[in-house]
Image (cartoon, rainbow, N blue to C red; front, side):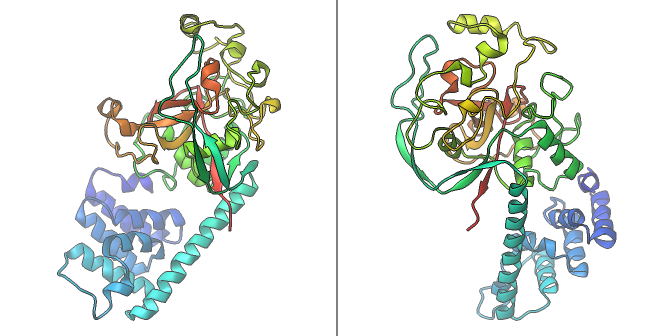
Length: 408
């Protein structure tokens, strides 16, 4: 269904919309595809979707239609300021009135409220069901100490001037106790079956691989079911989080879950303990004294057998748990967040259809990484260290975990 909707020839896309609406409208993915087609850049495809939404009263299209024309309870009022519209707005208004089945503005307002209340109920129910099948920790509401007062010291001294010591206040949330495993990610792939239902709107097309397929599953060092998922990019993680009923954490959510409220340096406390973390010395079996030694060691890495055991299962090293019980928030794999490295705001990418070379120097293409990884020295393993990565990169050093709302 999604492939037909993306066909380069607009008459084929329009025909696909008619088929989806006429034969498959009761399938949620088909209804969503028809709704999405109302925003097709070719007007005749969009008009076809609007006509199908009218004819078959496809209520899944309501949010998309309201984005185009506004609330029907407003534009049907006699005192509403109206101006001449084009075909698209006219088709959209007709579709909304057909779906809701009335032109009375007061009744429309009631139906709008019921529609979106029902949608929120369904979303919360899905999130709750997903969360009950997951292993999560609760991070309670309240303030915590974020950032660092001074840079580190020693051979790996790195400035963190963009993350000053300060107090932050967050609402309560749940977070995955471990990074997402290969086993859990496989459930996502099996359930979605290549569907684009949970994709970010900016999700790039990647014909060289199946949708959201990890790029390192061929490597036995990384593909065991209990190991953290790696070899996915930010868009893959974003889609998984949405499927799971959650989101990627903001970097502040990640930091509070890692360090608690006392501003500790490592998840387990303020004293360095190499036995509680998987980092470069453990994964390669040798210590490094400075950056030159680190780089000399890292260039020995191969795509098959060096190091022999780079990552540990996601539930390993329980002695390194954070104050809330989250595991391996230091080391093993870097963890993706939804935060832009430079602005501190949620990522809002707009790179679809462009080659990474066109945006790899754009600040809006870099998200924050946290926690350090199996190639990291001690400096990167603190609760406050900020790493960054290009939004479309795939690494065997990077994984993620999700956060979820606490039901009111």
